[in-house]
Image (tube, rainbow, N blue to C red; front, side, top):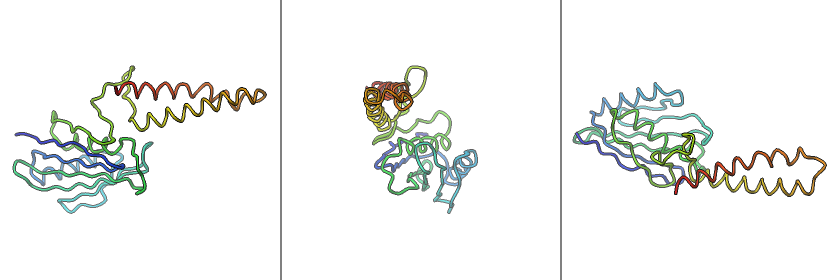
Length: 193
């Protein structure tokens, strides 16, 4: 049986994934419930059988997320449409958290060995090579934010070094720590080329 996998579309911290699961609707529904039960971050908010609403706790990247899952029977399985929405409605960037959550849902529902969804929009692509040391590159928006902030803080530390020589505690931590953030952000951006 062929499993159709669509791309994850992300726009303004809202992501949508659509795929066909090779199971009946009730079996797909049970797999979603099992995935929720196995996750320490996820809770079931509502369940009407063909529509589930999940709540995800906050992380370093978001204040929390709502995932709405709609299930519909189709030839050969069940059509799954999953949408992420940040709890804070004014959120414009989720640093790739929505696509990561949708991939985790897909992996939990689909059989082992099924193709993983690709990403378009502002999400982070898991197929990108890791940075040296096995750590994955940061999402592009986070890497740019870190590079800009670290550059500004480094300039502030250098100016403070010249102006304020009496109190080294005000500039020394910035001067010592910001180059690491700057280097890591630049490595993340270079790894995407």
